[in-house]
Amino acid sequence: MARSARSDALRKRHRARFAKTKPACHLCGRPIDYDLRWPDPMCFVVDHIVAIANGGSDDFANKAASHATCNAAKKDKQYESLVKRSGTLE
Image (cartoon, rainbow, N blue to C red; front, side):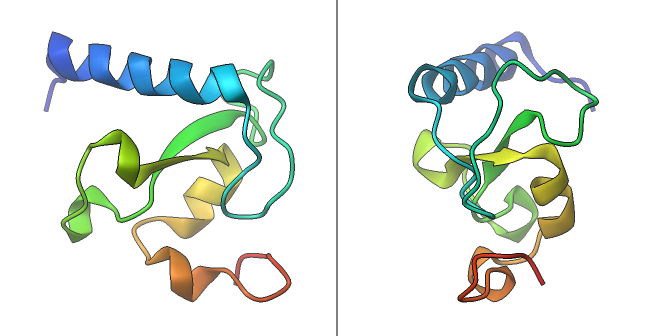
């Protein structure tokens, strides 16, 4: 399914908001190097906290900064079930 110009613009705006404040990865808690580019596994990606596949919205409030590798490990699982007290992924 091709993305529309509107969804691309929304995605770019959301990425820019995160890149401006440079938050740490919401999944592992480690800093993100915002200069790294895809396909580096530690590059910045935007994660849907509640996956679209699970009924999550594409709103900014449902998104968080993460490393590509952390986001890939999470897939469409619920965030709460993934993060242990130590702050690592299961």
